[in-house]
Length: 465
Image (cartoon, rainbow, N blue to C red; front, side, top):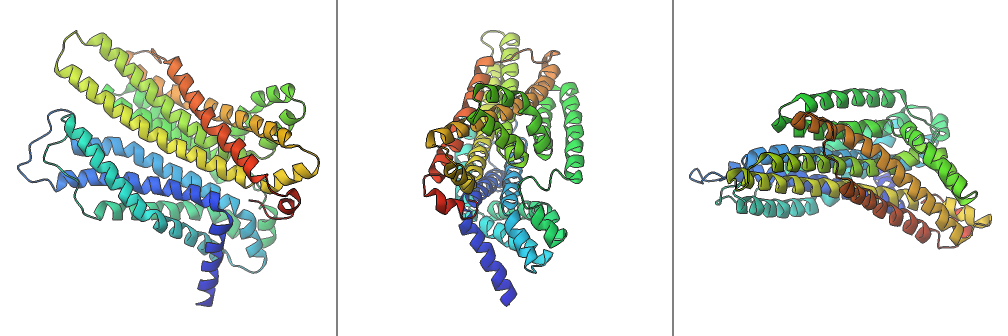
């Protein structure tokens, strides 16, 4: 009993020591539970409908919409949870290693992190139920207005969708926890402490193998999207984008280093001091760089894929439909609304993941900023360094995400038009890049200046974060 109480106190203590990191994890879990609740409620609305309820006037039907539309959204939300959880656990490596050196067992280390995760999942559960149910009611209302759902349907008050969402979030989070703490809890305590630095552990063999397998799976889905019928190509293209982004996340450190090599050189040459330091910080801490780059790549990759697919369909529809066509025009408008809704949801998930990760990463560098101040760095120099880091991070994420978007979007275009990327909306892509920069620069620069505002001596002598 005493052992259980001590582990619980340590778990709750970590929540208060790293609020930015756990708030980011909480936001990811909140979105995941809300998403599963939303689409589960739509299915429940159809299942619980009275037998005499009339059918929808247009569109594929409510259950099919919830399945096809929700499939990608749920996968993206769960991917965001796994990414946020891995980052949160990695920030605690040193604390877990210190616990191992004072006789904590691997089982106790794993139990510590598991209890943190369970606490966060349960804490955001009620808000996820409220947000998901409200979203389901709004979505059903919009579908009904467009004739895609029977007029007599309503979201039932059953707690089943929320319970399923809670269980799904717990299972995914606990499975990700086991993977995240596997190495730090299995090696010897002294080795755990030696590997508790950001870069000491490197990229494990299993992670590299999984990343390469992800690339192979993504390539297979790209081929499927390019050779499928138009109605199946869209889902295959979105799944391909998500699998490729997951593979990039697994191969994050080497991929991030490679993609920042040339932009980093430009920054070094443009500013011999702050530019050199910014590039050295990113390349020297590739795991940290990877954690920052992947959410931006997720945002750019998913948004870019959706934009390319939407533009391809719109131009094909405009060319194929004769003026004044009736049902085809209505269906086209409905499909456009569905794609826009899906785009907004996916972009929102990725934007939340981007801001959460960048804020938590930057807040964890309080001691580093204090040491720079003590050796003579001014606030202006610190701001320039952070600005250069944010710029490099945004460029790296945009490059990786764009590569995924053009690959998946090109496969979809190939299936519909026979040509790879016959329609590229460069202006819209410019807005996506601007959005990524708008999320990255304030998150890094604002958080960095905020956490470095206190007495440098006190911060330098304390712990990170």
